[in-house]
Image (cartoon, rainbow, N blue to C red; front, side, top):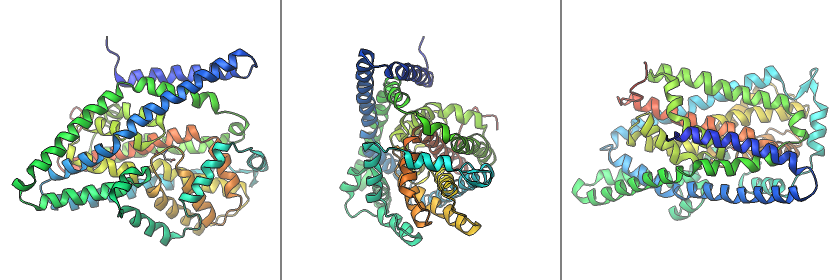
Length: 444
Ligand code: ASP
């Protein structure tokens, strides 16, 4: 009997968690068990990295070939303009919904306050947190890659500058520059549709068949997912933990509750209303992609799997999905935007900074703009949180960000799943609005 892919991944997720927990209990005892545990964890890290690299390796050829093959089959630019405005509108609207949800919950639950005043215990935990070298390096990297003093104009102009790369090869080589690669591929494809068909047909056939090869390759790599997921999760469970988790319990709860409501209430309502499909069917269609997003904490690395699920299981056409999904993996991050908003206001509460409505409004706009620029890789929102904290004049930004980073993984995994689900919902709604038959068996 063949076990279905999503079950395989789920089983390996559970087994890896159990093994990580077992290792945690063994690892604390001095002696040979520790060497053994460290050896296994280090091996898992290597295998996990190999799996992630395999997924990332196919992103550039997959994005280029699917955008070009998809757009050239749209026959002309007219349909494309409509698709672009609908997609952009959907992404902006759902991100805003997510941020507002986070804003309401963080104000109601107030995870950073006790009895109306700042939670000194958390503040002390922030101050006493000993940053590891890896955390320090990450924060230093964040400062270099994100301009902390960036105002709204800088954030907005930065987006457009990143969108138009001066060198497409270097954009392709740089993980954070996927927007530039998509822009080039779109221009290339649109230009192809402007030329007479006989002139471009051979080129189009090449991209279509390149895309077919990449799809087959994705399937091959996904056959390794249970092993890859296992190897990724064991070190995460083994290494995370510690006192901060306990003191930040309320904050965890707020973030997870907001993400949960967005994913299981808001987005299902959106697709029910706008696409008339049964949300449960869509969850079923996206199972493998959601589990991969959760395990890898990277929406970019999950993109190949997201595309497979949306096309093969949800029945969205190649042309719609190859436009909406690569763009979504880069610019649309509902979970990240929500998280940024909650994290910034939480830190303000802990630091005793009063945030009137106007200041909170600025946080909402900043979260919306910066989430567009956040790369689809683990803990990437750190840069954005640092930018917003600094531009909102909230003190202790660096200490807080390092401390949050220490407990980020579970939240990162969860918000990445929300990010990927948001992209897939957009593909579904746009496909439906273009008259496509999606989720055929869905009870609408
Ligand atoms: N890990 C997230 C993603 O890949 C980005 C983030 O919020 O850090 O979608």
